[in-house]
Length: 296
Image 1 (cartoon, rainbow, N blue to C red):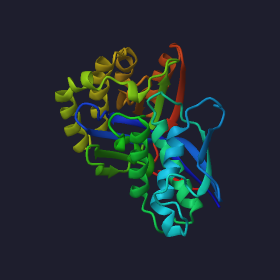
Image 2: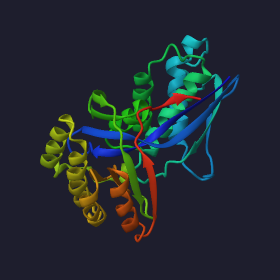
Image 3: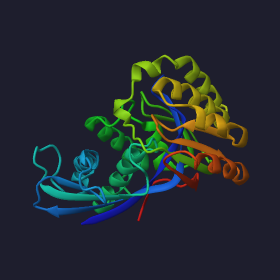
Image 4: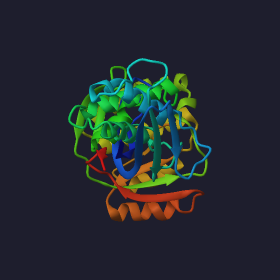
């Protein structure tokens, strides 16, 4: 029994660390997952392609929770015993840089959840939002997120742009979102679980303003204001965003950084890309996308 699925990374409109409300949009970079189940096995093993020393706790926990939740209805005895009677292996492969603010954990969790559903032959039994919320639960369990990242997970699972209440794992808005996108990825990495949530709380009044803009559909303006506020709160330079502002529709620190994401038209992004290439790190030219996670 095996299954395959993929889910995209995402960029930030509103960081949920300050108020619990977040907003994100899917980007056309993705993570794929393959899950293999074996009767009589014991436990779950994970592998991340090209990263032999990477932490696989998240993808392993996703498989465990999926087997516990949906295994019994698929005829498997996996419910609540400490030793899972169906062994599993999970392998992910990704174009989404890790620890760069581009929602690599959400993409991996969604892809792994859907691949496990596929392996269980339970596609018709599991709604995508169920798989999304269970992936968020797995992320909380293993400590890779402060907020639960339902905003990031929902954008990855459903595509387009979403606004969410991360305290309730509630989807408030999901809309189509069509833009060209440019990402600057500096050499350093930042892990979401290490972000200073208390300091981010200090910018809550600005986050409330960003929330209002997002709920009004002014996503470009929202992400620009968000980027300035959270760059200051998290200790990142706003210079890359400021130099992009005259040329783009929106630009923001993505997640807890360190990447910066801009959206706009090709001509404007060409100018910004030339500027950002003078900085250390790399640039990624891509687009937003309106399809999210899916089976392969």
